[in-house]
Image (cartoon, rainbow, N blue to C red; front, side, top):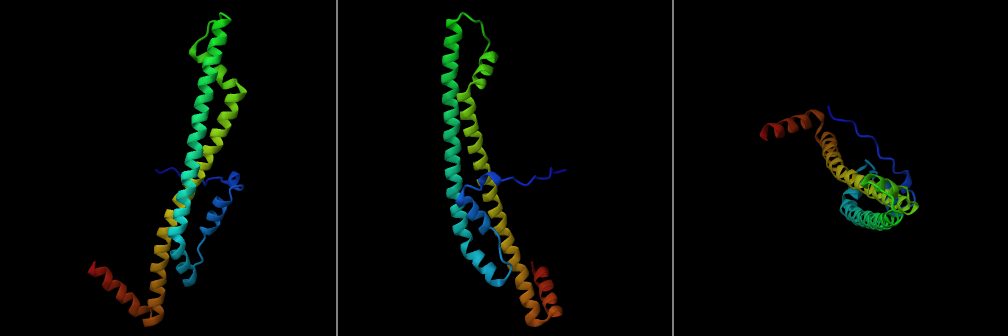
Length: 167
C-alpha cells in the first residue's frame, strides 16, 4: 500500500517573493479564457521555477560545503587541543564534541534552512508538472462540453463512442 503524502509546510518560504508569486500563479481559472491563459504562460512559469530551483540548489550545496569546512576545521582544532592536553579520545567522542560547537550548530542550521528551501522549490516544480497534466484534462473536458452544446448530448456521446472504438 502506498504511503499517503503529507502536504509540504512551506510557511517559512513567505519571505521568498519569487516562490510565493509562482505558488499563487499555480491556480487556474476553469473558464475557457482562464485555461487559454494558463496554457500560454505554463512554459514561462516552468522556466522561472527551473531558475528558482537552480538557485535554491546552489544555495543548499554551498551551505553543505560550508558545513563540511566548519566540521573539518573543528576536527583539526579539537584534535590538536585534546592531543596537547594529553587527553585520550575516540572518533565518536570527537564527532560529538564537534557537533556541540556553536560554529557547527550555526553552519548546520544554515544548511538545514537551505535544504528546506530547495525541497520547497522541488515540490513547487512537481506541482507545476501536475498542473500541465491537469490543464490537458481540463481542455479535454471543455471540448466534450463544447461538443455537447453544439450537436447535442446524445450525438456527442455517439461521436465519443466511435472515437474510442477506432483507437
